[in-house]
Each structure stands twice: as C-alpha cells, then as structure tokens.
Length: 161
Image (cartoon, rainbow, N blue to C red; front, top):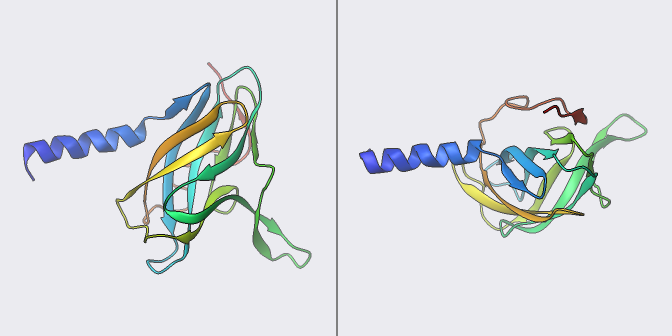
C-alpha cells in the first residue's frame, strides 16, 4: 500500500472514532450491520449523548441504503418471546445524559436494503431530533463486531463534565 493510501486509511479510521456533534447532541461509536450478505434488512447502533440543558428525542432516521428506515426496539410478548417493534415516538435523550442504541435493544432499522451492507463500507444516515434537528452521520459497516464490543451501559446514564 502506498504512503498516500496508508495516510488516507488512517485518517478515515480516526474520523469514525470522533463523535458527530450538533446542537448539543453527540453521536459516538456508530456502526451498522446486516445479518447475512443476502439480508433485506440491517441495523445501526451508536450512543446518543445530549450535552444540552434540555431533553431531546430521536424521532426518525433516513438513508438511501434502504427503502424504509425506522426506529426499533425488542420487547417480550406474553409467552416470553422477543420480537422487534417500531418505536414511533422515538427515543428520549435526557439533558446531560445518553441513550445507547445497541444490539438486542433500541436501534435504527433498515428495511428493504437497496444494496448489501459489506464489511468496510460506509453508509450515510440522517438522524432527526426533536430539538437538535437533523444530523447526518457516516456510519461504518462492521459485520465482525461482537454484541458487546465498544458499547456502554444500555440504559440512560448521567454524563459528568
């Protein structure tokens, strides 16, 4: 690999490690995956941090990688079977707190993929917040990440300065 290509690859890796920030909302550790190469669906995970003085809410998402993008979570039905459901009201992010979108919990769901999600690809997703507005995030596809790799506490946490 040439020095120029190596430098570009290093810069790209560093840029994904840096959080996206807009109007007090920070997006940390985003990644996306599909269950198989032939999947018609995929998901994105990340940590949403709110450094603003007031609560906010993730209310939607869009991407050209899928026909529909929805906010989803997993719930247990009366028989104890986990199922995925859309969360139309979105996910709250308390002032000074965070909300993890993680495997097995809340996440951004891609339905009707328009192309396969391949290891190393980067997809662009626009997250819509009630107060902060739209934030566009470049999300790397990581099909090898283990369920708990790089993730925080799945609940709402208080941030300290």
